[in-house]
Length: 126
Image 1 (cartoon, rainbow, N blue to C red):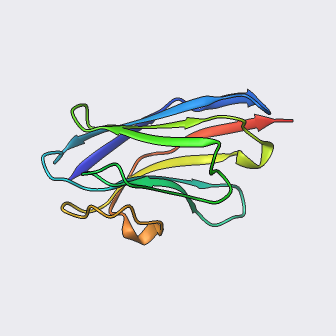
Image 2 (image 1 turned 90 degrees about the horizontal axis):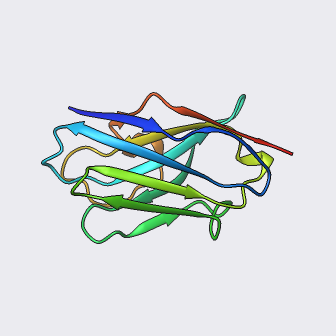
Protein backbone atom coordinates (compact mmCIF):
# COMPACT_ATOMS: atom_id res chain seq x y z
CA UNK A 1 0.00 0.00 0.00
CA UNK A 2 1.04 3.56 -0.70
CA UNK A 3 -0.36 6.50 1.23
CA UNK A 4 -0.42 9.95 -0.38
CA UNK A 5 -0.79 13.27 1.41
CA UNK A 6 -1.26 16.48 -0.57
CA UNK A 7 -0.60 20.01 0.59
CA UNK A 8 -0.34 23.50 -0.84
CA UNK A 9 -3.82 24.25 -2.12
CA UNK A 10 -5.63 27.49 -1.42
CA UNK A 11 -7.15 30.65 -2.82
CA UNK A 12 -5.22 32.76 -5.30
CA UNK A 13 -6.00 35.53 -7.75
CA UNK A 14 -5.85 34.96 -11.48
CA UNK A 15 -2.27 35.22 -12.69
CA UNK A 16 -0.90 34.03 -9.38
CA UNK A 17 1.02 30.90 -8.45
CA UNK A 18 0.70 27.94 -6.13
CA UNK A 19 2.85 24.90 -5.49
CA UNK A 20 1.25 21.61 -4.57
CA UNK A 21 3.20 18.87 -2.84
CA UNK A 22 2.41 15.18 -2.50
CA UNK A 23 4.31 13.01 -0.06
CA UNK A 24 4.18 9.24 -0.42
CA UNK A 25 4.64 6.77 2.41
CA UNK A 26 4.25 3.06 2.85
CA UNK A 27 5.48 0.81 0.04
CA UNK A 28 7.75 3.44 -1.41
CA UNK A 29 10.63 1.09 -2.11
CA UNK A 30 8.88 0.08 -5.32
CA UNK A 31 9.11 2.38 -8.30
CA UNK A 32 5.95 3.84 -9.81
CA UNK A 33 4.83 6.80 -11.88
CA UNK A 34 2.86 9.53 -10.17
CA UNK A 35 0.39 12.08 -11.37
CA UNK A 36 -1.89 14.97 -10.52
CA UNK A 37 -5.53 14.99 -11.51
CA UNK A 38 -8.24 17.54 -10.90
CA UNK A 39 -11.99 17.53 -10.70
CA UNK A 40 -14.25 20.56 -10.91
CA UNK A 41 -17.91 20.44 -9.80
CA UNK A 42 -20.04 18.62 -12.34
CA UNK A 43 -17.04 17.55 -14.40
CA UNK A 44 -15.08 14.34 -14.77
CA UNK A 45 -11.69 13.86 -13.19
CA UNK A 46 -8.98 14.80 -15.64
CA UNK A 47 -5.23 14.52 -15.77
CA UNK A 48 -3.14 17.60 -15.09
CA UNK A 49 0.32 16.09 -15.32
CA UNK A 50 2.14 12.82 -14.72
CA UNK A 51 5.78 11.87 -14.24
CA UNK A 52 7.75 8.66 -14.52
CA UNK A 53 9.90 7.27 -11.74
CA UNK A 54 13.14 6.63 -13.54
CA UNK A 55 13.87 9.46 -15.97
CA UNK A 56 11.43 12.22 -15.08
CA UNK A 57 9.51 11.80 -18.32
CA UNK A 58 6.35 13.91 -18.08
CA UNK A 59 2.95 14.21 -19.70
CA UNK A 60 0.88 17.37 -19.38
CA UNK A 61 -2.68 18.27 -20.24
CA UNK A 62 -2.71 20.72 -23.13
CA UNK A 63 -4.57 23.24 -20.98
CA UNK A 64 -1.66 23.54 -18.53
CA UNK A 65 1.39 23.17 -20.78
CA UNK A 66 3.76 26.07 -20.35
CA UNK A 67 2.12 27.11 -17.08
CA UNK A 68 2.49 24.08 -14.80
CA UNK A 69 5.64 22.11 -14.02
CA UNK A 70 5.70 18.69 -12.41
CA UNK A 71 8.80 17.40 -10.69
CA UNK A 72 9.70 14.69 -8.21
CA UNK A 73 12.30 14.04 -5.54
CA UNK A 74 12.60 10.27 -5.26
CA UNK A 75 14.83 10.53 -2.18
CA UNK A 76 11.95 12.27 -0.40
CA UNK A 77 9.18 10.28 -2.12
CA UNK A 78 7.57 13.58 -3.00
CA UNK A 79 6.21 15.16 -6.17
CA UNK A 80 5.70 18.87 -6.70
CA UNK A 81 3.30 20.66 -9.03
CA UNK A 82 4.31 24.26 -9.62
CA UNK A 83 1.33 26.16 -11.02
CA UNK A 84 1.94 29.57 -12.56
CA UNK A 85 -0.31 32.00 -14.44
CA UNK A 86 -3.34 30.45 -12.82
CA UNK A 87 -6.75 30.97 -14.40
CA UNK A 88 -10.26 30.74 -12.93
CA UNK A 89 -10.81 27.59 -15.01
CA UNK A 90 -8.02 25.92 -13.01
CA UNK A 91 -10.33 25.93 -9.99
CA UNK A 92 -10.88 22.34 -8.85
CA UNK A 93 -9.99 19.76 -6.26
CA UNK A 94 -6.52 18.48 -7.11
CA UNK A 95 -5.66 14.86 -6.40
CA UNK A 96 -2.27 13.21 -6.25
CA UNK A 97 -2.11 9.64 -7.52
CA UNK A 98 0.39 6.81 -7.78
CA UNK A 99 0.42 3.89 -10.19
CA UNK A 100 0.74 0.33 -8.94
CA UNK A 101 4.31 -0.74 -8.08
CA UNK A 102 6.66 -1.26 -11.03
CA UNK A 103 4.58 0.85 -13.40
CA UNK A 104 6.96 3.51 -14.66
CA UNK A 105 4.98 5.06 -17.51
CA UNK A 106 3.27 8.38 -16.62
CA UNK A 107 -0.24 7.39 -17.61
CA UNK A 108 -2.90 10.03 -18.19
CA UNK A 109 -6.05 8.07 -17.35
CA UNK A 110 -7.47 7.88 -13.84
CA UNK A 111 -7.78 4.10 -14.03
CA UNK A 112 -4.02 3.85 -14.62
CA UNK A 113 -3.61 4.76 -10.95
CA UNK A 114 -4.09 2.59 -7.89
CA UNK A 115 -3.52 5.00 -5.01
CA UNK A 116 -5.07 8.41 -4.41
CA UNK A 117 -4.68 11.24 -1.96
CA UNK A 118 -7.58 12.95 -0.24
CA UNK A 119 -7.46 15.99 -2.52
CA UNK A 120 -6.68 19.64 -1.99
CA UNK A 121 -8.84 22.56 -3.11
CA UNK A 122 -7.42 25.13 -5.51
CA UNK A 123 -9.57 28.21 -6.10
CA UNK A 124 -8.57 30.91 -8.58
CA UNK A 125 -10.53 34.13 -8.38
CA UNK A 126 -10.98 36.45 -11.34
